[in-house]
Length: 168
Image (cartoon, rainbow, N blue to C red):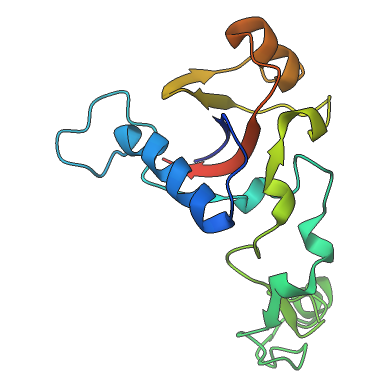
C-alpha cells in the first residue's frame, strides 16, 4: 500500500540531493528492510513525490511530458495488434497501456521542485496520511489542514515540508 507522508525539515535544503539525504536520515529508523526492524517500521521503499507529487502546489504530473515514454506494449504505434475481441480493442482505444496515444506514463514521476517547499507556501487545504517531525512518526487526521495539524500538534509554523510516497 502507498501512503502520503510529509517529512518536516527545520530548513530548506541546498539541493534535492541534500533533501534526499536529510529525509533518508529521518526515515531510516522506520525501514522494514533493516535487520531488527520493529513494529514501528512503516515502509519498505519510498520516493520523494511519487504518487503525491504536486500536493504542495497543485502541480499535475499528468501534464509533464517528462513523465511519459514510448509505450512498451504497442511500441508507440497506439495499436497492440493482438486483440481478438473488437469490443476490447475499442474499449482500450487500441492499446490498454497507452489508450492509443503511443505514450505511456513512466513508472516513476520526474522530480518536481514543489515537492520540497517552505511550510508557509504549502496549500492551506493540503492533507496527508502521516507526518514525520523531528524523527517522530504520527498519523494525522487527514481530513483537516496539515498546516493546522502541525501548528496544533507540534507548535510548528515554519520550516520545510517534503512530500514522500511510502510503500509498505
